[in-house]
Length: 108
Image (cartoon, rainbow, N blue to C red; front, side, top):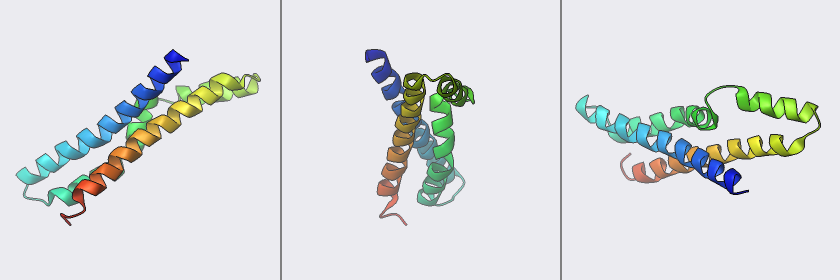
């Protein structure tokens, strides 16, 4: 169980960091290009969200293969673990996206 929680927390934090870091760096770059940083941050956060989830769970279709092969073999526990990892990665990306929206609320 400890390994599951550490992997889930890591997936959450990786997805969170990708969205948050990418959005903040994009806003920094937008200031050099004289573009509105808040608009760029919001756009980047929404576009990075799905890629953050993919990167956090491994960056390929392997987790989907694990789910498929374990369900067809009748083993639900590994499939449920992979689904939970995807959910934790989604939560991390979504939280970062919502924080970006909160940060940009007064700027637009």
